[in-house]
Length: 322
Ligand code: B12
Ligand code: SF4
Ligand code: SF4
Image (cartoon, protein in one colour):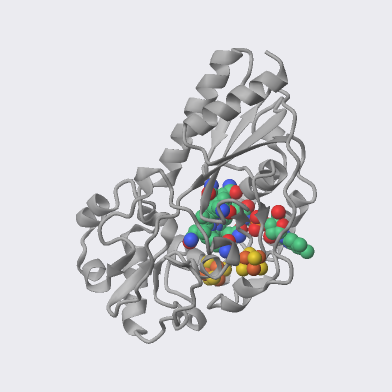
């Protein structure tokens, strides 16, 4: 099968599987993104995410992940649902991406079905799938594949869906005609930089994870640095401020993926509930939910810090229509 027909068949199968966005990029060493990743690591902006350091060579060069790779297929899956944080006293906000079932399994499932289809069409093709599950610079590839651009808050924004999208990739040894890369549409806007509660976007397009509430409430272990404890802005798990204020998210469309419908009590969580929770209850409650990543110790630390700083809630800054 020639590259053009393969591209058409992959695209229509991806749509059938529920991928909202799809684009193709020619594989190769990532320049300048790989160098920028090295610069980011040298500044220590990854905090304690040592795995980012250990896999940095692979992240800059997909042929180290799949020898012979020729094409990176990027997909985007909309997770927006029309709910919003009400900022009720005694609760902590959960980031939108974690309201429903864990996206890792959902996006990987779609991509595995896509890869099986490709191998059915052409058994000679080898491939690998990733959805936040391996050493691939997902946003860089998505921009090259034309499905969006990295905004100043560093997330990928699609003209059609905004930034409430998960990313995934299919690495293939088949050569397929690439799509044109997307260009930057942030213009003079700096809303995300101004709104960030901790100043984590140190320069446009550059994020210091050490200051980012998403990193601090999810990845970081141990107590919070004293200077951020009072700036939690009401976030119990993750943070959406920079995306809530982004004009490209003001007309977000509702996802058709049922699995991303918020679970009961997930948009914001009673802090007392969390503080009362034991290990077994945590595991049962957050089974197949992204929240399990922070473990009970992390979630409890977050709830305790919010309880100690009840007034450290952000003002209603969102431009989101809800
Ligand atoms: C590490 C990581 C994090 C870290 C660091 C975030 C970051 N911005 O790097 C932390 C824990 C903070 C995090 C948080 C979040 N994450 Co995260 N994360 C990742 C992960 C695993 C790697 C990202 C990475 O490579 N970072 C390293 C830096 C160097 O990458 P970068 O920001 O893309 O770097 C570019 C810029 O820094 C720029 N740059 C650097 N220097 C310079 C200099 C100049 C002059 C210029 C112009 C640019 C520039 O160029 C770099 C290369 O293109 C990806 C999955 C993956 N494998 O890609 C998910 C991923 C990025 N995360 C995701 C999500 C959903 C989130 C959160 C929204 C979750 C939440 N709500 O709490 C937040 C968003 C916070 C934010 N504002 O970015 C999604 C993003 C989807 C999207 N639409 O973009 C991803 C793609 C996972 C997925 N498969 O869906 N994440
Ligand atoms: S996720 Fe929150 S803390 Fe992190 S950069 Fe965005 S606004 Fe700042
Ligand atoms: S808020 Fe403005 S600067 Fe930030 S990502 Fe959105 S458009 Fe770009």
